[in-house]
Length: 189
Image (cartoon, rainbow, N blue to C red; front, side, top):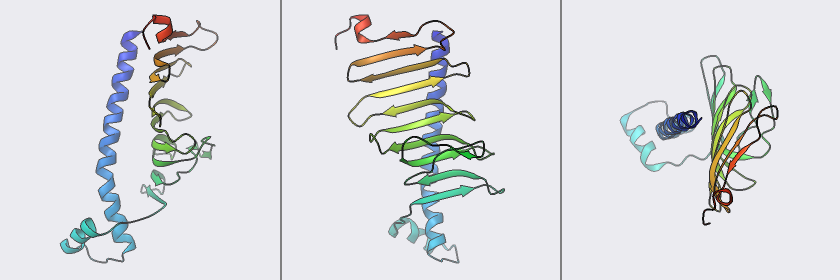
């Protein structure tokens, strides 16, 4: 079980790393594309590109990148829309702003967002029909990592007001949850 958790954590760390790389790589290109689109620049001269990178600030509420079939693949917005899952808009439950990534069918598969209700920030990882992992940092401190598999097993790792915690939950037809917290380990808070 520990090896599975370490493997899942390593996979999540790798996905987080590549998400950060993608975000850093796309931001300057996105800004440049918006500048050129909204500034009516018909020529891509070195002078125009240099000017765009040095002097301009572009302000938009949203940006959508579509593939060659017109499928939304990336959404940057303030706010972002509710998730599109298998062609249907489903309530996110709270509003937020950030970057969403979609698969070839247009289903939301990941997001990097700030949430308006509690001012937290997080990155999510989704299978086709639901979230299977996230990393959330709270406004007042503390962080949580959640992982879920196709069988309903869930693991939470994090820190919060009551100290560090590990919580593993299985569906009701399986064993009872395993919870490790400072109280159960008699650790100082």
